Length: 402
Image (cartoon, rainbow, N blue to C red; front, side):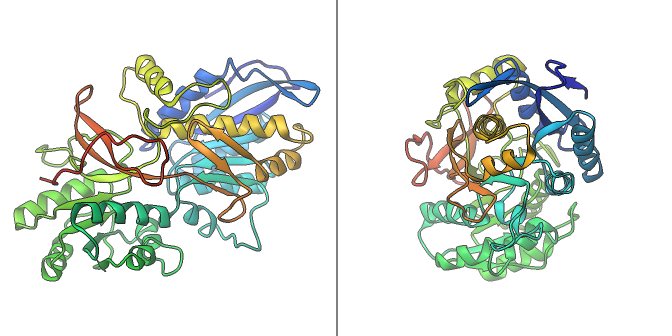
C-alpha cells in the first residue's frame, strides 16, 4: 500500500502498519477507515510557534509477523516515518513494536493486553522499552470485568471452567503473577483448568468431562470464533449446558455463523466492552463523539461499527499529541519522550502514560457486555455492567446463554 497525503520531503510522516490481507484484515478495516477520515485534518500541526506539514503512509502487515517487520522497515527507511501506529494480533503487534525498537522509531499500539505486550516482550519495571508505547486493558481488568458478569448472573464463588489454549492467550491467562487466573481466584472463584488445547481445536471432550465432574456452570474462554462454535456444539451433544460463557477474543466483532451453521458462536456470549457509540468520549482533535464516529463508519462502509474503531481513532490522537508537544517533533527521541509524558482525553477515553501501571503503558477502562439479538442489526453488543466506566449507560440485561 503506497503512501498517502502530501509528498513534502520535510513533512512529519505518520506510518501505519495495517492488516489489509490475511486473517487480520477485518481488524485492519477500522484503522484504514480512520486513517482516510483523519488524513485531511492532520495535514498540518502546530508545535509551539512553528507549523509542520504532516503526511501519512501505510503498509500492509499481511497479517503475519514477517510482513509486519517488513512493513515497519519500509515505513521507516523508505517513507521516513517519525512515528508508527498499529492495531494488530498476537504475533503481529509484538513484531511491529520490536522492529520499531530495532529501528529507533517511536511506536504506539493497542488491542493487546498490556501484560503480554510488556512482560511478554521482555521489559521489566526497571528496564522499560525505549521507543514503544501502548494503551489497552490488562488481563487483570478482564478478570475483574468477567467476575462482575459471573456474579451478576449468579452470585459470588462460582465454579468456572477455563477454555484456554496452549498458546499465548492461554498461558498468559494462567500466569501466576500477571495473569487472569490469580485475579479471578482473589475474587473467590474456583477455576477448573484442564490441559490447554492446540489451535485449531479438533474436540473438547476432555474439557467437557472435567467441567461436568466439577460442577462447572460458567465457562470462560479466549477461543477463536470457530473453536468457540465447536465447543458449544459438542457441549450440546454431550448435554453440558453452562449458564454463561465469557470470552475475550474476537468478541469485538458482530456474531457470524460458524461450524454447523446452527447459530453464531457468539450468540448470548458475554464479553468485555472497551468502546461503543454510547461511550461518553470525544475526539481530542475535533470533538467528534463516539456516536458520530460509529455513524460515519456505518455510512461510509455499509458495515456495522466495530469496537476497535475507537482505539484506531485514539492512535492518531496520541500521535498528533506527541508531535505537537514534543520539544522537537523532527527528532525521534523527542517524540518518544512526549509519548512517555502524554496525558489526554480521547474518543477511547482518558489515556495517561504518567500513571502506569508500568512505563510505556496507559490503560483503557472496561465494562461488561453481551451479544444479544438487535434492532438495527441482527446482533448487537449490549452493556450490562458499567461500574468501571463513568457515564456509560446500561442498555441491556444479562440473558441466559440458551
